[in-house]
Length: 601
Image 1 (cartoon, helix red, strand yellow):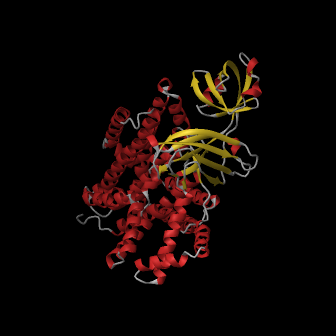
Image 2 (cartoon, helix red, strand yellow; image 1 turned 90 degrees about the vertical axis):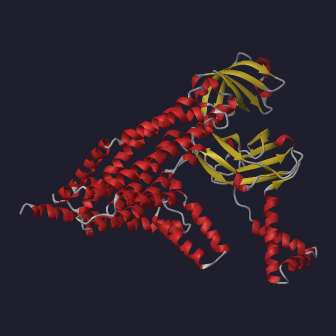
Image 3 (cartoon, helix red, strand yellow; image 1 turned 30 degrees about the vertical axis):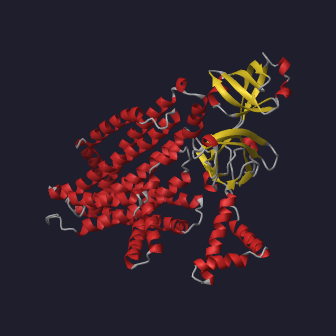
């Protein structure tokens, strides 16, 4: 009689968890499948999945049997000293990284290297901890007969497995928080060394590393229309038939093949022309949906000296301006526009764009003026030489224009070729509907190429702190899946075999995108049975396993790019609702049907 209420309670709990899981899977699949085909995901749809996910996790924690096993698992993992070993390895790694990883010699480069390698080391160590602990917990319980004591409580086997999974997640969450906080502290310590920074390095640290920026690519060019215009021009000039005859010789006399080869060549030439600019010529890009977060900073400054010939002035600013204004920020002093080209303590050197006369320079020294620091955007680009350019330095003039008001930012620059460069521009160059025009005049003696994928506009989209929190949450999602995979593997095979299963799946998840592209390319080239079979296997694995390259935030943090809450919610819903639940369901089914007294292999 005493076991009946527990049995009924367990049955009701199973039905509640099953219904919630089904609702979560259906709600997530409703938007995840169209998203995989290229459709946009409404934020409310991902929000529904996140709410259902939180509800299900709360239900699992509320069930007393699962909660008790989770707590026992958490304490058991700590007794193995694995957590202590992880903390020691992490402390050594974070202490050594700043000493041996210098990046490109600048503090910004050192911080990028620290964030990239630091997040990678944390993910690698925690992945190993998760696999070894998850694979050993259940398999060792079966091997040592400890599971008999637990299951005869009575405790349903599915509650036992989910409890093990939640306990392992709790351990991972604790270790991840400690390690992420340690990495953040080391990065902030390096950032605080202001005395070692030059102006360019400080600007890069504050606006490119410790930043969360949205990225907008240039509006696409209608290449097909340009190709049709080029073909029409060839036809009008009477050169089209000659070109087809020339390509016909290469195509073995096949006219349709010759036409296709000619189209490909014209397309290639048009794309090359769109992305290239010759000496003394100009190329332009248009951007849409550009945002500028933040508000203008206004403060008082005292003019210390005036350099009339160079149209520059030295000003001494109040604390808020110094604290919130990195070098090369665009500023306004009364009606004159300029930018800060040097900062020394509380003194700033401001270079004007030809408007110093408006400030009456004869009576400027000693005056107190009002300084406005506008919100900024950044134009980032990388140029490649297609002609002979001395010293590998690209000289040119950049113009960023507001198509609505006509406000412009004009700057002459010398940039190193084949390396990313950044141009900081006032937010006043953005129209009310988010449009920006960017133009570049090539002042070098040779031609250069700036591909459309190599130029973009970055705008402030939040703080680095919250971006770092979201990056840490992405790593936790990876560990949530690995916890489920290792516990599931340990539920039906021995510890060594369970580890082998996990270590087979882990490399594929890390390189999923690369393997998918490689197999797809081999199918297009070869088209044999083995290539098609490999493509089918890879597609199946891509559906079942998450892409851990997306969950590793090192590259995103290095580039100072924003990780949106929407992206985090979508990743959480798909990783847990679609994949982790499937793995856990398989594990529960295998453990339920397993004869525990049988010898494991």
